[in-house]
Image 1 (cartoon, rainbow, N blue to C red):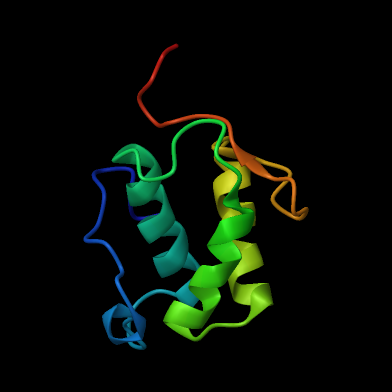
Image 2 (cartoon, rainbow, N blue to C red):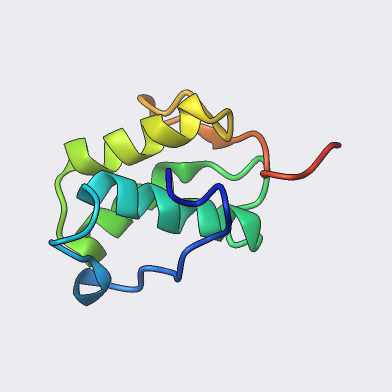
Length: 95
């Protein structure tokens, strides 16, 4: 993900998605990572409510699921494929 060097600007709505940029799921994963880092989605939060974001960004469930799976691969979310998924880590935190 492009966020390792720093978090990108937040995606607020469909207009913030860049069709010429990285894949949409990468852009969404970056935005969700930024939200995890800034505390919008704290450890223990259940990202099932994140599926409401697919309407904001006008993307399908598969795109959002792939973004969540990307964060799961990074160790930030557990159970990304299930409604019971939750935030389990924040980048840079050692506790």
